[in-house]
Length: 311
Image 1 (cartoon, helix red, strand yellow):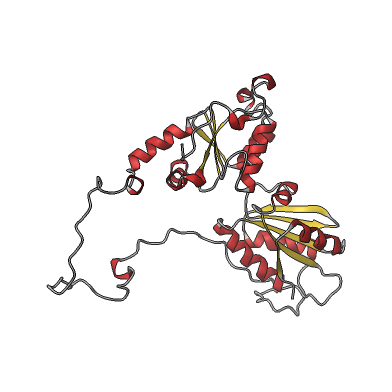
Image 2 (cartoon, rainbow, N blue to C red):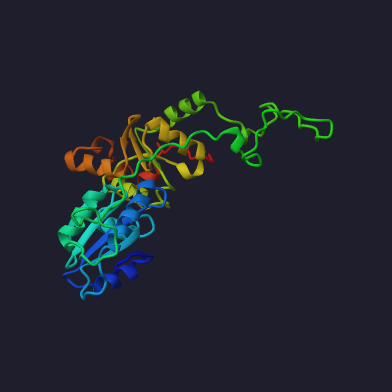
């Protein structure tokens, strides 16, 4: 049976592509390790791949797994702006792209270009011969951990426990003033005020992984490139340097991923939304651009830059 193959380098990708027949459909699965839907997509593609036989030559289909953040050049070549993102190639050309992890949509697209799997496959089949794929993933926040399930007391009922004279003395409770400043919990209101100030620190604010000169993910790198190409003066904040801001901003903006772009204190969105805004409106962000003699598109060192967490 056909298997989902991980592609660790661009060189291996090019070799795989060069050895493939023009009649073979090549399914590229761009993923990121932090995105839960990508785990669902991997399951979908592994199940779908196993439904095709590898005994025929040339193969009807090949499935490749590509880390979108590590192989940035491939992500940019195939215009990956969100994950999971599927690209289907045939004869070296893109024939279809899919964003999201809807199982039926993925199966239909693959079968359109690779044909339906044969009757002698090993994958579980539903009535009518269709490959049975897992349902769309539903992500829910886990319930709070019960006291009886905490470390060292799992399965024990401690409700009747009372300390005896033989038990060691309990350490005195520390006040917030005695706690190190870095470990003192910031109140929700204080964090909200801080985030409100940060998103308005510059007319255009980019919350990204890394810095403009050293981006730490492919999506942040692409967004920096877009802003520079358009000559936009912007401030930035490296969310990897401040976990409190990183987690707090997800709730503050109701946007779970990074990078995030704010304009005049209002959230625009991530890379895919920015690309969509630019394609729909040529004037988007134009009023925030600077003339070359005033600093040009090198916005990373603009005086409006917001301080990072270490400042």
